[in-house]
Image (cartoon, rainbow, N blue to C red; front, side):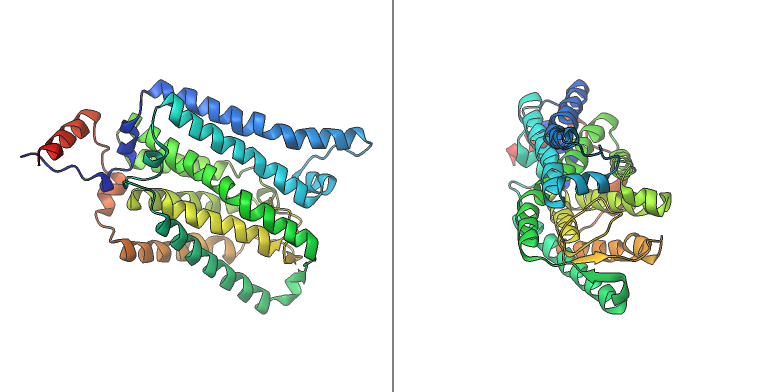
Length: 328
């Protein structure tokens, strides 16, 4: 009798459920890039051009674009590009790979929404507590920025679109690329490292980097590794999707600053002079490891070395396992 095939320990191998030739992933990346960066940017670029033709100076940075267009409209148009990217990702998976969205999301038989909401609620609560504590301890660094209608509009935009933005990043990075690179290389650590580095480098042109220096890349790349570890250890995207949505949603609603990527009508505005400090390194070195421990206890994670650095099973091996399982 052969070894039983346990699907819950095979997230990367879910890519075998579709057409998984390497060229399909290369074509898919091109399609997703066109949808996300080219087609998705047309609405924002169009509005900026129209405003500029009306006599306004063409902006050269995020703060300038937000000021020219208006913070809420700018946020809406910026997030729309990620919606285009998410649609392009789903279309690519369904029509180029003939793979289901469920198998791109998880190794479980169906998407575990309880995991999504648990991660969202846990990180949301922690974010609110940390932000509230910092405002309490350093009130001179913040001004109350609340205005009813702009904040209500911000809430509507954020609640509907930010989860789509973060879902795109997870489905593309920890989903599509994680599975594709894993199947191509046959090693689990390779897509973990590559997707984490790409995730960090995609933030390289954020205004925070210009203001704080390249040291903040530790936070971005470290967050990429954290989300990648979540995905591989839990054999699905659910925890990463929930965490990422909570992080960006509350970032948009609670605090903004003139030097951040999210220029919003948030509750507070940070007026302090930015510096690379403990708040950049604390999540990566302390909070993320604690969260991984909490998740591991709740969901019974084991075999860390195998899940993070082991070999990806070959297609033929998976087929044999499935055949043996069907005979049990």
